[in-house]
Amino acid sequence: MEEFNYLLAIALILLSTKALGLFSKLVKLPQVVGALIAGVIIGPACLGIVSGSEMLSEVSEIGVIVLMFAAGLETDIAELKASGKASFIIALCGVIVPLLGGAAAAWFFGDPTDSTALLKNIFIGIILTATSVSITVETLKEMGKLATRAGNAILGAAIIDDILGIIALTIVISMADPNVNIGIVLLKILGFGVFTAVAAIGYHYIFRKWTDNSPKKLRRYVVFSFVFCLLLSYCAEVFFGVADITGAFFAGLALSGTKKSDYIYKRFDTLSYMLLSPIFFAGIGLKVVLPDMTGDIILFTVIISIIALITKILGCGLGAKICRYTNKEALQIGVGMVSRGEVALIVANKGAVVGLMDEKFFAPIVIMVVLTTILTPILLKAVFTSKKAAA
Image (cartoon, rainbow, N blue to C red; front, side, top):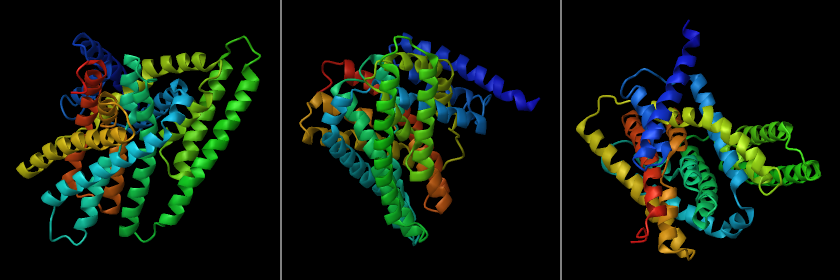
């Protein structure tokens, strides 16, 4: 009967995320905070009644794809174009500052006799460059702030951050593994940009021709749009080495501004709310495992978490100020880029595979990911609602 345990796991995830989500709302916090904490409580770190599984992981991946697809549907394309240059500068600063901070922390706690210490230290910094925009998207949607000037800058910067992170990761891995060719990876990223532009513009044109003269809101519009989203996500990950959520975002962007985009968004919002989002957010908490840690490792956990928080706010905030955003908007953008989420975990796993990630540092990285993910929606609400946020 063990093959049916996933049914019980999903039921417990839905029940706990909703219960703690309502409690979060009661204490005036975004409901996503409750969902994240629910995963920690029912997972191996606390009660241990639900553990991660391949099935839950795959459903969680679909959940974040749907979340980013919906974010693309809601995005104002004109505003996103206007913030393009600013997004690049914000992302660049948001990569450089955390990379330096993370490498410095790893150097202080690392083994100076290790011949690969420099690469390992840089790799810890690369983990801190990651940004998981899905948590920010959910929080901003809940507050009705996703389409703001700061919200669009966060979305654009997060996409560029993902690409810059891939380039940095590839360079470091290529230095440790001669089988990886930097030039090929850069060509793949360029190819992804061309392929996505052609696919998105083509589908947008076909979809508008198909739906503009139809007064009906048909479910086939939703089905074919989801097929396009999944295909673009698949191509991004498999053929170009870019995160699948990036493909999903551009798929949603292709439908943004069409007459049926609101109808499609509402259908996906229901699917996400009922099943996919709770599993995704709880899944982050389920990854938390607290092994036996020495005093030095506990101290490293605290320091790396603080550095992860401060360097993103400072780096992205500095980039925003360079691009003439207000103090309040710069702070909002910096906070919106804090969450590391599944992106940092994927990078950490990759480092462990190629020998650039010491096992003793893995638990602190996971804890840092969960802390930044939980703190991001709390801080976002504070900086988007407080009149004194700029202070």
